[in-house]
Length: 447
Image (cartoon, rainbow, N blue to C red):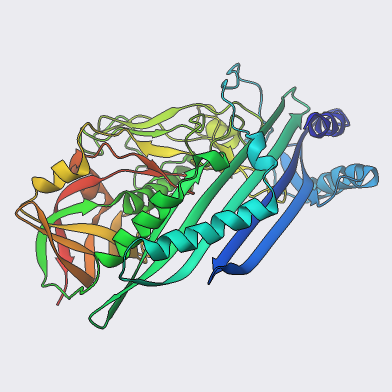
């Protein structure tokens, strides 16, 4: 990795007078193994590296990239970025990041045992996952997929303003989708195990979760329309947080795409909700100590005890909003300039077990899965409507499985109506963690 940073520094040092240059270099390796019927169904291994160069001159910004680090391409990519900047519209807020004095978090996100893991061992993970899922319950009759996935990522950022940062991370996960059957009914369920090292992965947990999710939906029926308490499974909560996190960026606010615009300091959620984006948490699959502009990442509390306390910013949105970057620049790899985004969202967990929370629900629905959530949410009005399936709760006990229902509300009301947060914080292979949420008075539309 030192050579990546050295190359980035060198190219950034070619900046001419009156211009700013940012250089972003990435090297990444990925593997995905899928097992079926005790054999390898597919195996994909890829390695990529490249450079992205951003030039700002006279408030005009240009970007160019190359998928190689050959010496001849470095100067060529910089020249292309300069040419692109010449044709861009001026924007007084354009500019590369400037060091803000925040030091990099002292966390180790790289595991050499994953980098050294053999392909045979990766295959063995996937095959064992399939076997364990099939053995988890006699009603499991097949596997839709059983996968081992890993990522080894290295990056370097250098700017003509003096930033020079590098990072490296590893991550891996197991994912399985089980097929359960009983009395002519067939249902599916999934399970995950996420870690930074292969020693973090637990085949039994992934297989067991998939079996439970599939079998408890067997015999699912339609349900009548009603208003009830909804208990969101951690997987559903994590998906919901992903959407909410997008509306809490300075970029979304500036573009008029946030329901939280103009609400800083206001009561926007239940007092039980404290929402944090913390890329420095090593448990988060997408953790990183460096953001997409080379600044140190840091914890940012977005909602504090129900009160909106911050938005996420990169350097551009921070300048335009009259504030500063929160170290929240994200990139789609070396092919794109930085935008703004959450990396590791989580609701601070409560103190109670999900089973205890369910025991207090007289009439409710445990929502295990939702469909069409992203397309069913309006980020400006907050209105949402999504298909759902899960298990009814009657007198504090799980009852019949239900399907083909719709739950609808607004994000504003949902956040205010959270009456309890579980203690089951669960990191998933995405930019948010899940935890059980109990939400009062939701409309369930059914038959």
